[in-house]
Amino acid sequence: SRIKDVQFVKSSPRAKDCPKDDRPEFAILGRSNVGKSSLINSLVRKKELALTSKKPGKTQLINHFLVNKSWYLVDLPGYGFAKASESAKTDWSSFTKGYFLNRNTLVSVLLLIDASVPPQRIDFDCANWLGRNDIPITFVFTKCDKMKVAKGKRPDENIKEFQEIIKQNYKQHPPWIMTSGVTGLGRDELLLHVSQLRNY
Ligand code: GTP
Ligand code: MG
Image 1 (cartoon, rainbow, N blue to C red):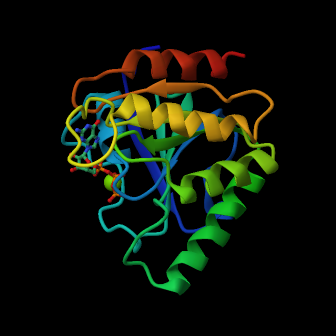
Image 2: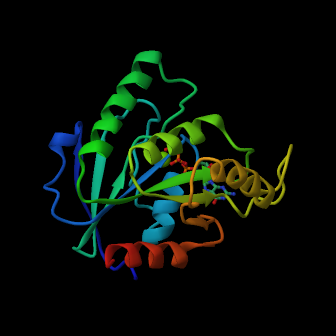
Image 3: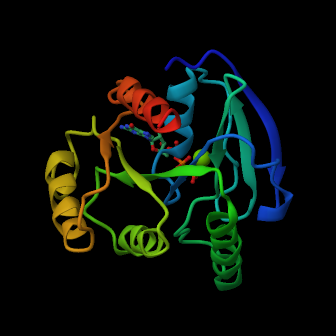
């Protein structure tokens, strides 16, 4: 399940502009600042590789990366930007929904959840929308190393609270993995999970 090779393929403004859907793919999704870039960089072990878009809320592109010449890792714009205009938010949702609903080779959405903050409404809205549309998700909790949080609870307490709420909406709790871009926690587990789903 090692990543030996990552190639940028293309940035697509719309679902229909994406590369031919002829390989399994995994989409990375989450709130702005959740740690998407950090997670991707830790997965591919290239700190300098800026795989995600730089300007939150402005770049609205679907970015395809070909991993080991066999599967796609897809970087999507984050949601919930404090500074994005209302129209930008609307564009985001219609564009991303188009991708989710039409991409036949999408194996699972890796939905990143910041474990250093209490459960957020917008994350549940997103998870519930994907669930209603039968799109498989894997919860990837980020920033699990952050044990000293200025206010509030520890990551494990936030995760527990998050899962209690998820249980009310799912018959079966989707798979979940605890990660940290700082310590590398969960890196191998996530890669193994992805390779198992690919070969399923
Ligand atoms: P946008 O591209 O702006 O949407 O953000 P992003 O989701 O790509 O987040 P990014 O990886 O840029 O990380 C945001 C901030 O959180 C940075 O200051 C990171 O250093 C920090 N961060 C990300 N992952 C971790 C983690 O696992 N642990 C800790 N302690 N900090 C993290
Ligand atoms: Mg980023």
